[in-house]
Image (cartoon, rainbow, N blue to C red; front, side):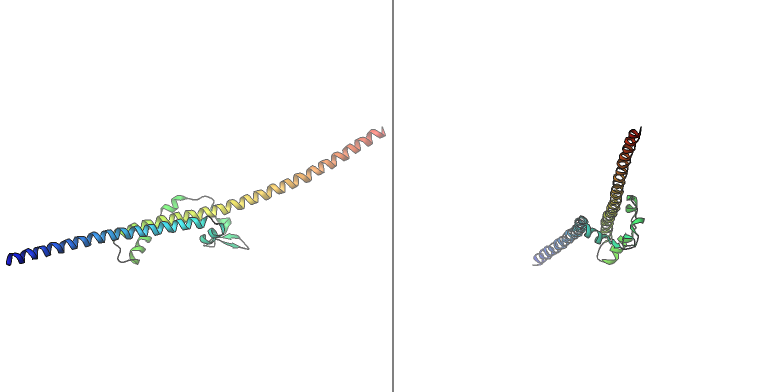
Length: 186
């Protein structure tokens, strides 16, 4: 019986170690799946943000851009449209601070360091893409305003050309009349 007891004890030990190994594998798989869920969530956020940006009034609202009676459009920081940069410096978007990953680490105490770093990188990239989309919305607004101004100038120029051509026709008619009068008096 002693050997049978030892054999059973060994089998129980092997079974227990098998369960522990299985638990470790399960934990790794669940961590991987959790990371994929987070990544998918961030990518879904980006997709929805991009779809929102295609609808003009939603894009303005999403970017925090409001219409002001005094200054035209202003962004969420209160900067008027006239002060918006026409050029996007993409290097500014690459220089994110490490605060985001620290914030992720402190918010979710259960995350390991690698996961926090990964999520920090993902959040930085999502924020970069979001910032670029917002800059592009601002550039579109500025371009539309410049286009409208150019159209108004062209329209005013065309009106001025019409006025001048009417004046030229009137003067030409008067000149022809004066020429006929001068020919008739000789």
